[in-house]
Image (cartoon, rainbow, N blue to C red; front, side, top):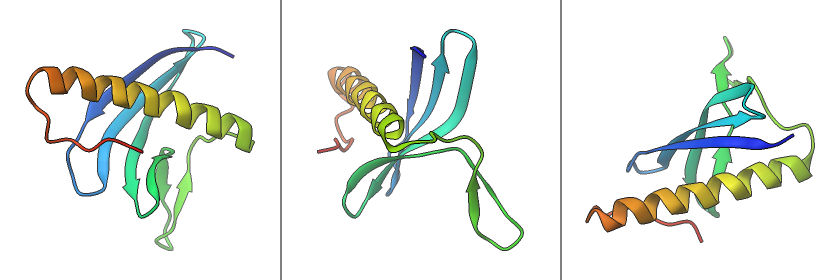
Length: 98
């Protein structure tokens, strides 16, 4: 499976730093991933739905740790690339992942 497109929409909120859409093989898109700044650095949150009991359940997610790590790596790379583009437009008040 190949990632054929990643789109990043930057947000400069306290924890939410970006919304992300990711396309696989030019055939399947997953919308609504998030770049989140947590206590231990940046991470990717999968699209989720709030359940009646108040908990959240992922709508779509990787099945194994290796693929989750891969998706997180490529999304954070694209996030950093998008930040660099914004920085070059003199909008540098955005946080970078470690």
